[in-house]
Structures are given as structure tokens and as C-alpha cells.
Image (cartoon, rainbow, N blue to C red; front, side):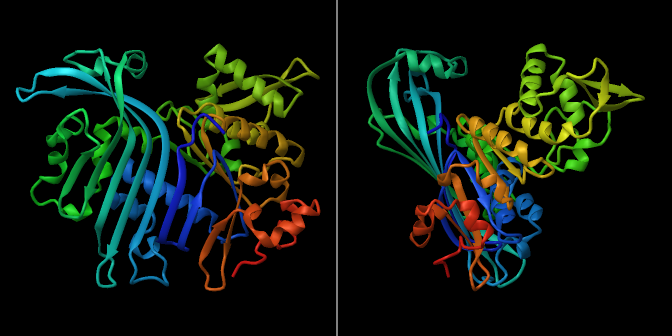
Length: 436
């Protein structure tokens, strides 16, 4: 098991092609299935959650095409609901105060799990909607420290771990939005801390007490951008790398420091990376793992345009290399990315079959510290992925998408016992065996 596993469980009802799903996720997840099975819709759900945090719920709905395309067209009368469980190590200090608001001591909080639930009602079969219920539950441990400070911002997570003293008690904090008001409550409060010390009332009031604001359309995730817990939802990156755009010559532009969704700014990102000798060494080693003949890489600027050049072991001359960008985009997305969740749709596009095993190996390595979710319909990829990390998305007879692990399907075990691989069953369209 990896050091980090952000999303451990997802439950969704009435989102796009999904009627009801309940699935546990691993650090490394490979989503397979035929075209229009629902792989992209599953990724869209995760993007929807991320957009709620980065912007707001109204914009998140708009980016999915509006209410009409957010919910399943066959389930118009039903609410959209989902829950997501995240495991994450996160420590931060809380100042405990007395009645005069003078700080008495600093408590440490170690969070290890978070549950988020949201239900959206659709009004009178129209394009209107409202939040029916929303809740976030934080689970962890609370403990005393030997700090006594007027500024908790000066205390880092490592400081807390080295200054524990006394007892440790369970920490359970709930934030709830019923579409009209927000309530928050601290349970298991043996330390006698006030809930206001965790979320100061003006933090919530700044959003939910504004006149003329429709409170049924304000997510409490918006509140989290003022809290340490916010990082649990924010650190997500989604890529749908376009091989043609990765190859194109770029106009010089430093406004976007991270690789774009389609990889279109890849030469610029690489140009910035190789300015640092350590990053250049790391990047070249990773490229050399895919293409052993490549011995040097550089970015050339010509009339404000940026493109790749490489030097191979056969020559001392640098030559233009458009094929290099295919694997390089995956390398940059995986290894030069600070976020803890990475999704890449069909990373095997335009990758020669002999390099697929290396690309998958890189993803498996990165998934030891991050969560990596990829999609494919290429059976070649399945050969190099642990069966327990493979998830099948398929349509049932009613047209709803379902997600399952083939290794958990009792009907398939006899085939797998015969040393057939999941890739063989996928090619022969047998992975749906036993499903209705």
C-alpha cells in the first residue's frame, strides 16, 4: 500500500450515465471499458467535485453542460447524490481560549479521514436546482502540546508531532448545510475546546450571512478555502493529453507554470524545467528509460517559438524530435506535478506497444506516493497492471453505467484460474459475464 491514498470510496446516484455506484479505489486505478461505457463520465464526476472547490457549485454544474447533462436523462425526478471518502495525513494546530479569549494552550489535530456528502434536488422537472443536504465529517485525533503561543501560523505539522504531551483523544468534527443554514459541531470534546476555535463564526458568516445570497446554492466546500482541510479537495490534476498538440511548436508564454490539460504547452513547461540542473537530470533519465538512444535534450527558441531538439547516441548533432513529446507529456504529468491526485485519459495514445510497459511501470511507481487514475480501451495496457487495480466500466441492459473489479466477479474466476489474463477476456468481450 502506498504512502498516500486520497480517495478510498465513491458512492454516486444519478450522475450522467450512472444510476447507482459504490466502489472502493486503490492508489493506482486503471479504468477499462468500451467506447461510451462511462469512463469519461467517471472522470467528469471527479472534475465536478474539484470544480466545486476551485470555483463554486454553480460554475461546476455549468461546466458539466448544465442540469440537463449533469443528471441521468432517465432519472429526471430523482435527486443527484454522492459521497466520497478521503484518507489523508494532515496535522495543524488549534488555539484553545478561555472566556476572555486569551490563549491558554495549543492543541494539535491529526486528521486521517474525511467524508463529504452532497444531495442536489431538481425543482419541478426544470433546469432549477437546490442543495437539499450537504455534510463534511472530519475524523482524527486531538492532543495537547507544550506550546503556548499567540500565533498558530508559526507552528508547523512537524513541530506538533515533536511537542505532543499528555493524552490523545478521538477528534470528530461535522459541518452540515441543510440548504438554509450551516451548523457545525465538535464531538468527543474531552478537552473542552470551543467549536469556534476550529471555525471562527465570521468564516461561515462571510458566506452564509450575505444579503440576497441564495443559501441553497452555496456549498460549504467554499468555506474550506479558509481552512487547512481545503488541501484535501484542491490538489487534483486532470489530463486528456492530445498527441498532436503536444508536438506543435509553442509561442513563448510563461503565464502557465503547469502542464495544460491537453499538453499543448509541453515545450514551454520542459523549457522551464531544464533551467534547473536537477530537474534536467531527472527528466533526461526518465526519457532515457523510455528511449535509451536519447542522450541529450534541449528546447530551441526560433522567432519567439519553442520546440524540442534531441541528441542521440549515434550523432553529435541536435535534431528536431516530434515523437519525443508523446512519452514526455506523460512523464511531466506524473513526475513534475505537486498535486496528490492525477488523472490521465488514455495515456497510451500514440505510444508504441514496446513502450507501454515502461509507461505503466512509471505510473505504478508514482502511485506509491500519489493517487493515479487512468483510462484506456487498449488491452495491451492490461498486461502490465496488477489485476486488483483494474476496474471495468460497462453499460447494463437499461443503459446505466456500472463499475466493478473483474477479479471480484465469481463468474470470471474459472477463466482466470486457467491462466487467461484479464486482457484476453477483455478482447473476447467476456468481462461482463454474469452482469445484467
